[in-house]
Image (cartoon, rainbow over all chains, first blue to last red; front, side, top):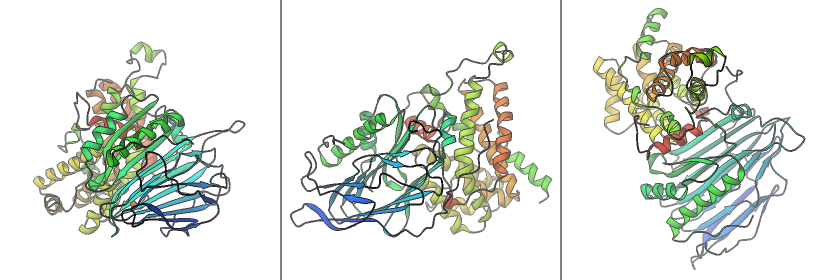
Length: 292
Length: 243
């Protein structure tokens, strides 16, 4: 029998009230149909790049990179990002690199991302993976408010890394995702909680031989779920070093893809294909691969 | 109810002879076997066991059962079972718990499995005339709630008079028995190995039950590989189980 393990609970008891956001970005649709940043308040540790119009993106889509200039997430930090896509707007938000959750000896850290997609909006929030360093203790929350006719595409991914000269694994990682209607009704969600020890067991049914995990979702009501499931299963079939499944979310909220891979390279490849497949189904054209 | 009376009820409810409908579900095990992620080790022989070679199929099944017990039942289902037991007289709270289980279960066939086993258990108790069973079934039939297994277990077993800890013991043991039973029917291992797995898992089960269950707002899970298997089960060609 394996060593005993206490039931996981965050070291820093979460308060349900959201912290003050270090980054607030609002997208709106101009009369021309193009989307633009209509409001931004971005402070340390974040930096917002200029709005990009990228080839093979929809003509009106605003694409931005939200970067951290601090080098990752550190002990005791309580980070909050708020993104709002106004009615009819189309926005793609990503990060330029993976986010490192550094070793945390004194305290845990928390990161909250609040996404609001108003009527008819398309909001893509596709950050690169979080890399959990030894002794990292991270609570990650993604709260989505979905208005009628809105679509949200998102991924939440993590992998492990032990830098040369270090040893051990992360202490704990808890990832909470909730999709709610504007009235506050819980439509769908996902809550993961694990410790580094859990990954070392390599248990069948838990993580097995895999070292990286991602959840990709297209969230929206009234979507052609069966078509999307079939397309995703076909596009993601037989990819190397991965084990993945496609399913409908609860309450007609969209589709999800759960992905396990042997490493971060395979994870990135699967996520790129899932994104391209869904984008093509939604908008008729697959996005061009980003150079990151 | 006396402790002995509650224990007797727990034995009855956790017995695989009780027609709760759980035998049709493998909770991802069938697809993990089909995808060669479980059950690929050599079959245990007396000779291997005598030589002390323990890495066999029963070891894999034990690890699978441990993962489901530790990372799904204890951290998620148990929270809702216990909350439902405490809210057995409060219909609105029960329906809220049901809605949370529905929304927070990622894989479609896991949601279906939890609903169908819960409704099946409820149906038996309606037939038996268990207090509280028929009114809750009416709400399910009216489409106002889902009838997920842990919520139904908490409601019905509290109404029967089972003690709180006996409910959790019955649910956990029932899960373990169902999983090893599925492994036997899939040909992964034999009946003796199945009993060995159940015996080996008991210290962990008791250790988990020794701690208080978490609240539904803190409930979580970590069984991504089993969830993926359940998702893949939807399109699997040959299927013995419903998930």
